[in-house]
Length: 210
Image (cartoon, rainbow, N blue to C red; front, side, top):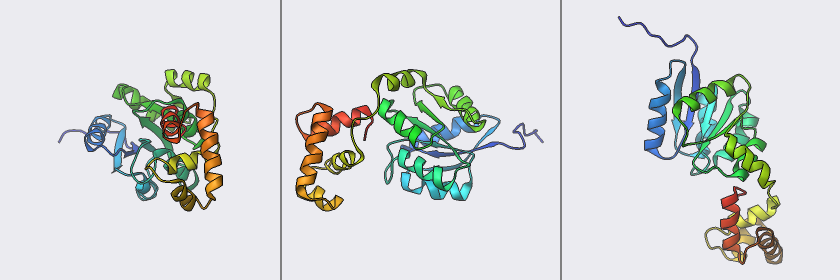
């Protein structure tokens, strides 16, 4: 019988990625590493915590833009509910605001998807030893960009505007008065240097503030 060269204790990894082809490719490539075992794969953000609690991975590899819940919000929940699981964000969108939010959510690393799989595998090993791993170019961009100027409520109002909702709709969703919603929208438009709320939403997303 062929000998199994996998170490006695592999690094257990959960993958959260909504694109099936990308998820399958990552699982296949990581599974070829002798010390890494992909123990769970999910396609939505709102099932990440349950999957982590069930499969007990050492590292959760999370995309940001997922259906149900963003990877950033899931990372914050994991920090509270599964603190032993290290979170590594892997995303197409290398935005400075996303990096800041990931670190605030307790993520141990932040990488973009265009890197080699060997670098990803090495990063998984590094975060498990307690290191923080951040894409160098993105780290520099985040430092130069500075923090988001938007308050939490301004972000809430902009998020509620993304589907073309009226001021009345937003007020109802967020349990605010219409005048308060208008004030938050006006403030967000001013801070993003845009002309209307849809431009403000686009600008905030491009910076990774939403």
